[in-house]
Length: 84
Image 1 (cartoon, rainbow, N blue to C red):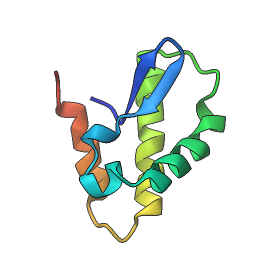
Image 2 (cartoon, helix red, strand yellow):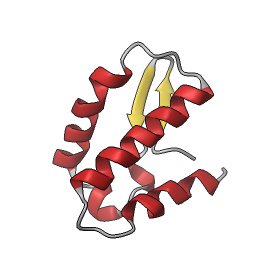
Image 3 (spheres, rainbow, N blue to C red):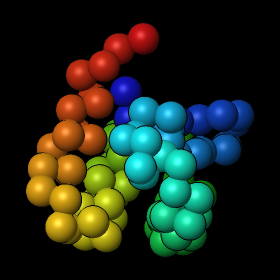
């Protein structure tokens, strides 16, 4: 599982339901992350490689934004092992 998912063709959203509650319900943080990433990912085709790269960008942004939360990046990166 990634921290981003396709909700419709060409529509990518944060997978906030799988984030820690304090982050997933933080509307301001969610909007800031989406705003920061939009320019970097707009127009990219939704290939597996691109989705993995976008996931890594989300991890990077969150790790920087919440650098005081030790282990957050590793915790969120672990979602890649969750399969539904």
